[in-house]
Image 1 (cartoon, rainbow, N blue to C red):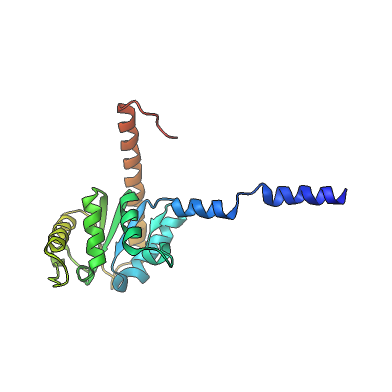
Image 2 (cartoon, rainbow, N blue to C red; image 1 turned 135 degrees about the horizontal axis):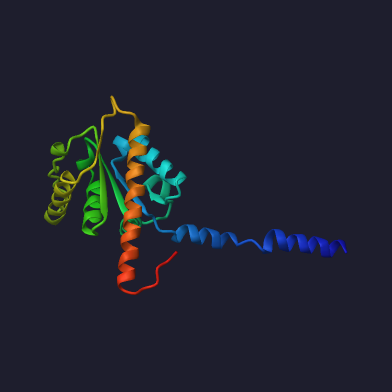
Length: 202
């Protein structure tokens, strides 16, 4: 009798629950919906991390390199896949942003994939964003990066002055825009599926 009771408890407690591997697999394949593009030394400890945490609390799955990537991940594979999966890119532009190959690569890929990009001009004006002529970068890369910078300069965004502004306010404002943009994109997808007579997911 005691053995049967113990077995019944074991089955309810453990066998009825998803295996750890299955749970982890779901986390691994879960696509990101917001890609946070930023210069680590300028904004990781301020705007980028606060934005990541805020979006997480609101049910989003944002991509932030030090929060999302783990040992063993291939850098370009992980970043490129996240950009292609995301619905929206948030570009946190800062004084030393254009010195970073990864920042410019991500930005060019976001625009190249026709993603909606929301710029946050942090301590920098759009007119101050100038491409650094790094001899290590190929002519094709320089062309792509220059094009991406021109695109972001003429995209309406938010501005933030770290010496005067309130971090929580800029994070809340950006999050409101992201949520509104997500709703718009979802409605557009539903309309497209409706026009093509495809089933509309709930």
